[in-house]
Length: 93
Image 1 (cartoon, rainbow, N blue to C red):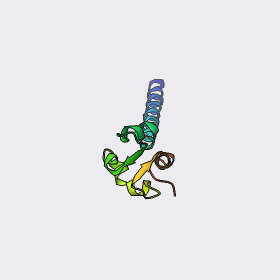
Image 2: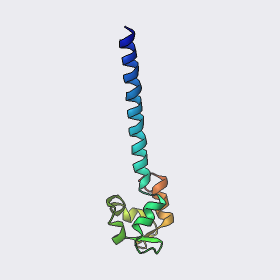
Image 3: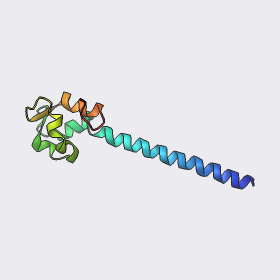
């Protein structure tokens, strides 16, 4: 009987670790879209702004480019991109 209880307890513990780890991985992926390193990778000409052409390297950024470009100057600057990070993939209102 002790063996069964121990096995159940260990199984529950492992399951909670796996589910918790999955949550961490998802949160990490969501934050990835607005982080400074990601901005730097997309800003291939290093002018401090992401053009539509540069944004095309990331389907999420490209797909929301017009929303991210708050001032509609056809470029996303670091401040606009940071708003994307804060809201984890969705631009702030």
